[in-house]
Each structure stands twice: as structure tokens, then as C-alpha cells.
Image (cartoon, rainbow, N blue to C red; front, side, top):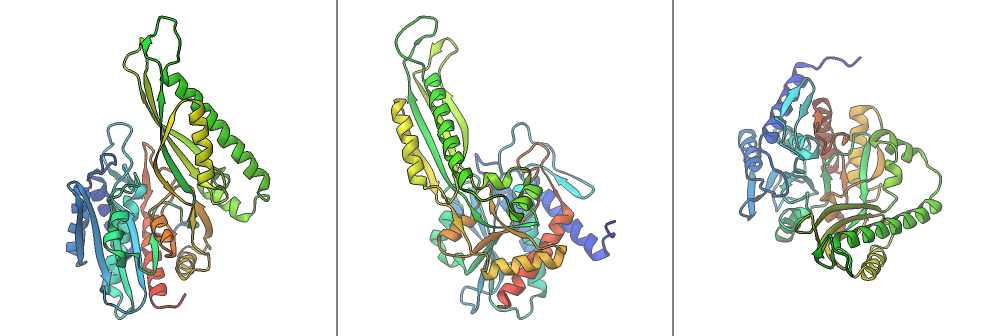
Amino acid sequence: MTAPPTAAGAALRDELGTLVLDLLAAPSPNPPGDVRDVAGVVTAYCDRAGLPHRLDRPAARRRNIVVDVLGTTDWDGRHLVWNGHLDTFPASGPPSRPRRVADRVHGRGAVDMKGGVAAFLVAARRLRESAGDLPGRLSLVLVCDEETFGPLGARGLLRRRPDLLGDALVSTEPSSLGLVRVAERGYLWLMVHVPGQSMHAAYPGAGEGAILRAAGFARRVAGLVAEVNRGLAAAHPPPGARDEAMDRLLGDGAARIVREVSLNLGTVRGGLAVNMRPADCRLSVDLRVPETVDPQDLLGRVEELAREAGARVEVLGRGPANSTGEDADIVTAVTEAVTRRTGHRPVPSTGIGCTDARLWRHAGVPACVIGPDPATMGTDDEHVRLAELEALVDILCDSARQYLSGES
């Protein structure tokens, strides 16, 4: 049986619950990506908590926030960066009202990742109040534009503020407290432009409608991905303890997914009327690529299939697979902090999705992810457990002290 929380624990849980509800009450779906209201919630909390912060305005409706938790730009010692994002997935229907039910807070973005943002802010307040002469520098970077991998969030901020790369990064993207994510697959985002022959649908004639042609192309891409994955499966050793941990914490098949190429057809646009053959169709394609697959080679094979269909491929975005060594000091600090707090040693893992942590890894900065259970992320009943956020606050504070003091 779980012991009842102490008075201090109950106060911390209430602080987290109130802050998560406030963040959720300021919707920030991306698209369209307007984060002004939620940024206002963050800066108001920082003002109340005595956390120095600066607001970055890369565009009219976009905001990034840099919180100077400990130290300054000319501070000696290690520089640890915490990173989270303010935007969320859009809701599939009218968003439900944020609400707290016992230990859970429900609402769009509770898991991805306003719960993690709240944990960062409360941990920043606690460290600011209790750090004393802790050496080094700690910055909290909260950004827009993450959900769409856009240029106005972390990417643009790091170009303008390279000092915020720091020496190590921690993200509280959803992962579960049983896993420390040290790697991610790469990605290819494509828009495929498929032409067709426009005419009255009831009359026979030469040519094929663009949507039917796009469907044929999509089937061939799915076949290509299945072929690549069969080869990857044949080369992989039998499942081990790490695979079993990932499947237990993230769902059956999670360990297999991160070793494979995954395919999603995100949007299909084309046609003018039900009784007309469409003259064009645009199909968006999301491919996630493990480190064992050359993304340029995969792109070339997709482009060849497109040429055979008379289509054209536009690359919307791409990024390579990335990883941090499991023996990096920040990974050790987070792993040991989780172990002390939960009594269980977390397993190093590869993330199923991509996070802004990849940008730090691309720059050669060690980065890891530790966050709440992702099980309800993006669902109509998205919710986060306050007990998990309470543990996360302790883990963030403990690992920051260990890393900045050089004890890793």
C-alpha cells in the first residue's frame, strides 16, 4: 500500500496540480502554434517564484522563454540545460475542459508536455531556494514550434543563443520513469505531388485520377518499408532484458518499433468534386529511420517509386538518428537520481518519437530524456499522474545537484 503523502508532499502535489491546470487552461495547439497565453502562465509563475527569465519573440504569436535558474552567462563550471516545449498536438475535436480527478490531471497536452513543463518550473523554484553555493549554471529553455519541428523554437533560439547549448541537456518529454531515453531515430518528412487526368468521373477515358495514382504509390512505399524491416529483423539478435523493459513500460512491440523504419501517411489533399477525376493530389509522408538505415538511400528508393508513378517528392524536413553515450555524466546523474527516488534502476532506451533533445545531440552535447508515462499522449483522455510529476521534481533537483557538483 502506498503511504499517505506528508504535509510537504501534499503541498508540492497541490502546487503541481494547480500549475498543470493553469498551463492546460491556456490551449496551445500546433498548428497553428500560438503560445502567447501559455507563455503568460509560465512568466507569471516565474514572477511569483522569483525566477529570472527572458522572453524571446521570434514571430507575432510565438514565444520562447529562458529561465536563469542558477548562475549567469559568465559563471564558471558546468552548464546544465533543461528543455521543454509549450505547444501541443491539436485536438481531434473540441478540447475537453482541463480537470483534476484525484491524482490525475486531464487535458490536451497534460503528458506532451505541460506536465513536464510544470515539473521543470517547480524544480527550478526549489533549486533556486535551496541550492546555496552549488557551482555551475542551470538554464531552463521552454520553446514553441516543437510539435512541427519548426524553425522558430529551439532551432532558431540556439542559432541566436549558442550559449544555451550548455554542457549537457535534460528533457522531460514523456518516456516513463523506468526508461532514460539516450537515443532517437531520424526522420524524413516528405510531400509527394501526384498529377492526374481531370475529367468527368462518369465518362471513360485515358488517364487516371490523381488520388487513385497516389493510393498506388502509397501501397508501393508501404511495401518498400516492409521489405526493409524484414531485413532489419533478420539481422537483429534475440530480444533481451532492455527489449522486455521497453515493451513492459511502453506497450508490446515498442522495442521492435525503434529498430524499424515506420511509415505514416499524414494528410491527403486533392480533388474538387465527387463526380470529377482529380487533376492533382498531395500526400504527406512521415518516415522514422533507425541508425541502421541510411536515410539518403531510403529517400532515393522512395523517389524512384515516385518517378515510376509520375510523381515528384519534396523534402519538408529531415534529421539523422542520434544518440548519447550511456556513460555520459548527465545520463549517470539522471539514472542514479531515478534509482534513489523510485528504488528501481531505469533502463537506457531509444525514443519512439523525436524530441528537441536531438538538436543538442547534433551539436555534440550529451542529452537524455526522463519524463512521465506516455500511455495517454495525444488521446482524447490525455492525463498525467501528479505522483509521477512529484517524483520527477525530486529527480530533476537531485540529478542537477549531482551533475553540477561534478559528482557523476
